[in-house]
Length: 214
Image 1 (cartoon, rainbow, N blue to C red):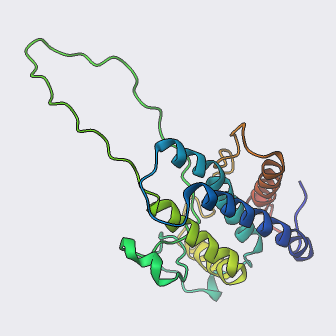
Image 2 (cartoon, rainbow, N blue to C red):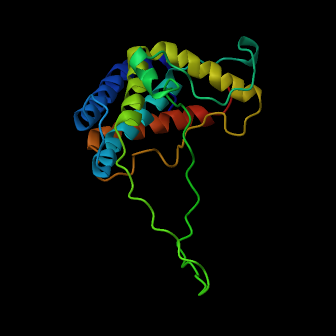
Image 3 (cartoon, rainbow, N blue to C red):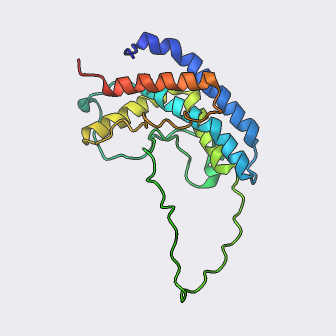
């Protein structure tokens, strides 16, 4: 992989944002525009396109973000996601939804071993029937992502300031992207063109994060 200069980024960014926009459209087609209960199958189907779209946006914002020095931004404790301006409707679920730049590295494997039950152990009461999830959390994530699509330059600058603060604090993981486990990339049903774009952006972002100093 070779480093991308500003001209390269300016060349690829419009097509990448258009791809992300198309994925958002697919997710909205699955979910609809209203907050309604959803079968878990539909939630999983929507996440199949929403997760890659969010991952592409994070990597593209990182590539667009200017390199800021410690002296150019006030270093302060801030591990929170980058906030975005949302329409008033996004606030009806409580706290305003924010587009998360950070990605978890993954969860520890679950303990799937047998559970030992003693004879004198009282039986547990039956669990209540699970309620169907609603589309509200996913629609809020889509609104946050759409805000990024609408004004990527401003969000790239916010990401740059956020990263500068993390570096100034000596954070062990200043660039908090899961390069080795990209959200949604391993799905076999992912469209080939989406997989190709996401893999390219991930490689470019990984190179930027690990490039040797000049």
